[in-house]
Image 1 (tube, helix red, strand yellow):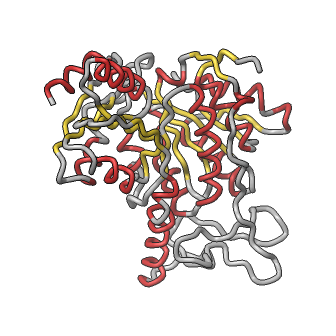
Image 2 (image 1 turned 60 degrees about the vertical axis):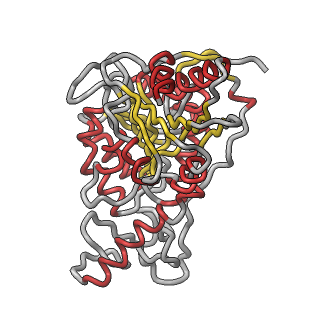
Length: 373
């Protein structure tokens, strides 16, 4: 089959369509705008809706409304817009509203550099909600991943009824590569579990302490209560500490309890390797080249490429770290995910290799750190 030459943002749009997305809302921002452009071309012929909000807050709000009505919805932004998303992200978490949020990261802080990439939003995705409830975030390495992980993101959002982030960046999203989408095996689309209508509907009544409640859409024949405030199973506001605690603990368990199941990664081990590199996103490509160069030089290094950043795949990290004496974490920021590695494997010597100045982390920079490690 013939390959297509496309940028990462187009692959994200095509992945959304393959997953069943039929609603998109966003506000133009470099380097995420071409996702909007592609969705504007793809959605209307499929009976979908593509809207430009008056700002980022409204755009994500539109998506949450569409999702509450039963549609699969996606939005895309970059660092400044993600900051504005924060309140709506908290709403989606607390009220268990599925949505996919693409963050095409660029160099920050603030407006930063619109045409320079970075991975500076990694911790913001995890902690940028009021309450600190866990989230899911996936990180593509290349254009193929942009397609596949977008499908995965929708499936996870539907399965767990929560916002799922796609942690792309300018380099991945605006880079063009040849990819044969028809030759890629993707998981079958997942749909949120529907509630039965033969008994009174409690919109937040879960039948397991680790699962989201079944779903019924707003605007159908059965009344559905929805609120952003602290609520009980019936959707009414509550101040009962027992109900509040039970709900908050379940929101944590439904993500953290399936961390091993959600963990996506590539494992590239080397025999007799003393050092393990851990990388993600576009920087993993430089790490792979550095590992190949080190092998040719007779100094093998293993590589773990994380494609699930949140929840932290602790089991995978611990298993791979146990086989190596030293760890080198490579990322395009001032040191964010390295903190999670240090927390997960406190008994290992962990070193950081990174930069955040608008340039990519090159293989030679990584190799210099590896040689001194």
